[in-house]
Amino acid sequence: MKADAIYFRRHRCFKNDWAGFDTIKPINVIIGRNNSGKSHLLDLVEGMSSGNLKGRGWSLKLYGVLDENSLKQVFREGTSGGEMRGSWWIEHGKHFIDVNVDWETDENLNPKSLNFPPDFDFESRYGRRSTDARISEIKNLIRNATYPLSGTLFRRLLADRDIKPESPNLQLLLAPDGTGASNIIRRYIVTANPKYPRELIQRDLLTALNKIFGSDGQFTEIQVKIHDDSKTGIPEGYWEVYLGEEKKGLIPLSNSGSGLKTVFLVLLNLLVVPRIEEKKPSDFTFAFEELENNLHPALLRRLFQYLEEYAVKESAPVFLTTHSSTALDLFGVSENTQIIHVTHDGDSARATTVSAHFDHLGVISELGAKPSDLLQANGIIWVEGPSDCIYINRWIDLFSEGELQEGRDYQCAFYGGSLLARTQFKSPEEAEKEVVNLFRVNPNIVVVCDGDRTAKGKRVKDRVRRIRAQVNQIPGAHIWVTEAREIENYIPGEVLTKAVGTASLPDPMQYEAFFPRKGSPGSSYIESRIGRKGFDKMDLAILCVPSMETPMMSRRFEWEAQMKKIVERINAWNR
Image (tube, rainbow, N blue to C red; front, side, top):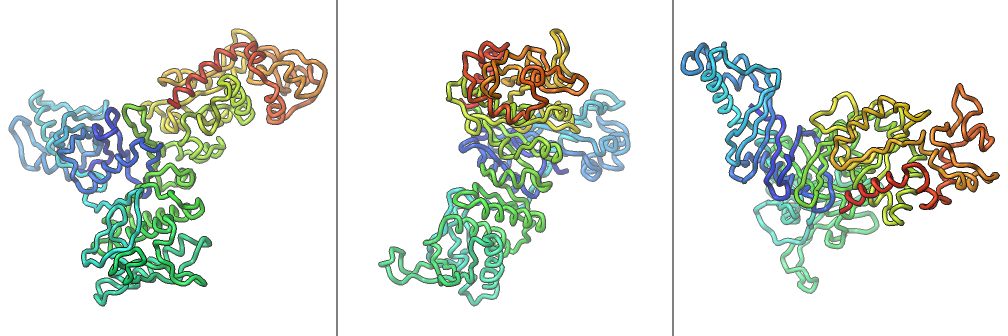
């Protein structure tokens, strides 16, 4: 039996919450701030790959499906009697075919619990002793379950890496920090041993290098030279890699940037290491840490595209730790990718799989949000549209006395008004699969909704009531359903007077329609007070916010109380 999903805890910073993988995809992107625990999650990947999960002090939680072949190993056909009673296979084992189970283990992989779907009857008709015997056999089965990636060779490239001149060595080993790279390239280029063809470096690796660099640089050859003069600062007898470029000749890799060395090391792992190990690429699991360091975004994008093509073509899963917006925007909408967001509350790290959000690409496009905007934010303020964002940003600036800024302390994102009916804010366990779950994008949320009430005592729309109930169940979250009809009703009359350049205007009333509405011509504030047939929302917001000040805004309905709560939430996100 093979487990489909695996999680661990009690490892380094992952103290309290389960962290792991719902599935394994060709590209698996682990994002998070520095020191949040991204690299420690790769330890679980390494443990799965090697099968060495026992005795590490971890608790594991696993999910899988009981298959017929595995069940027959413990519920043997032709066997009957004992405490289980009856035919072991026909009356017991056969009953569990294709049943989903999850279980927890201790650090020695012994099952501590076993759970079946709520509607599944696992009881034996022969009574409690027979049922216990059933469960005991299934625990024996899952005790020997294999894991995703089990049996693959794990290759890791650290964020702190380099390619340096090296002394010759017949042992071809590429360390996670890049040690051994020069020696491997030297061996393939200069040896007469046909086991190490020079074409692998001077043709295959060079072609891939040029494909990734594109217009940023084209290389003509890869060579090695031996240092025989200690005055260069490099020990005599050390070999160094050189790259040829048109009109530049051969340039030592030590004179090249770390970005070029990073690409070189990635390609050595992908193209050369499998040949050294005499394995297929599909026999490997690759993990690359922070490839974005010192790489131009355009070059980084081509490197990521190459990785995705390689992972899919070779069936070799790739794990990336990153905080690059390029990675998130490229992979965030790829069907070959999942994104795991690692956060740290100061005590313990947690990991959330957020790929489900991006499965609803059409809705994300309508929201007008980029993955990097949402996933890298300390917290998100969800508003109906861009004009609301302008007001909210100004009001946060006023109430925090300039201390809080969008893009640094929080991020605004749009849910598009009526699109609220197609979204939800729920924990992953409670979420409906057919509806976009914005909570999975980032659990730090504030939602701002127009109340749209036309009179005192009127109910808000059903979709707003639903979202309000969901947000109120999330610890630390906040929702502001405006007591006024819409957000423009909070604009003071004196601000509107300056914005439109007309005679003194009164404050908009609480339930007054601000913009013209079909079926009620002439009744809106824009028409009756300002004397215009319409006004662009964005233009109005841009004209109004420079004149807004705290004292005048504090007089507008519940504005002060709500801004206090919103600013408190943002400050909590940034502690």
